[in-house]
Amino acid sequence: MAMGGQGNNRAAMADINVTPLVDVMLVLLVIFMVTAPMMQQGVQVNLPKADTKAMTQAEETVIVTVDGKGRIFINKDEVPAGDLRSRLSEMFANREKKEIFLKADAGVPYGEVVRAMADIKGAGIERLGMVTEPAQK
Image (cartoon, rainbow, N blue to C red):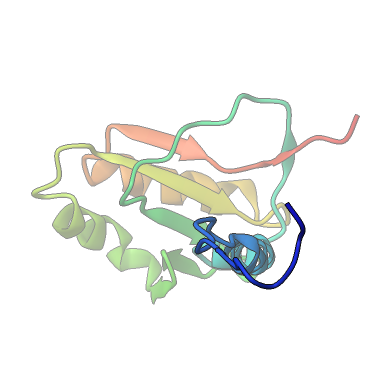
């Protein structure tokens, strides 16, 4: 038969065009890759370097930070040094997992870090994780 225009039986195209979907997904992937490092919680400090295994974090992680000026923070809220133990006791009174992470600036005197650790343990915290950066090899 000839390929004329007489018996033009064109069927509807049943394929789904996924190209726009892939384009949108790639844009979202790039956006999340760029914004994910900015989502860190806490106060920025100069962490000491150490060769240790990384600890797993729970969903509701509490981070105590001692910055370079000796100020103490619970997550992002500044706390007077004398109130750290009582604030942590209140926060962890009804929590099942009593674990906390401590970030201290590398330039902070050792005594201030030990005092913060003593207040954390005195508040009834069972697990204390020290946050460090990986050492350069």
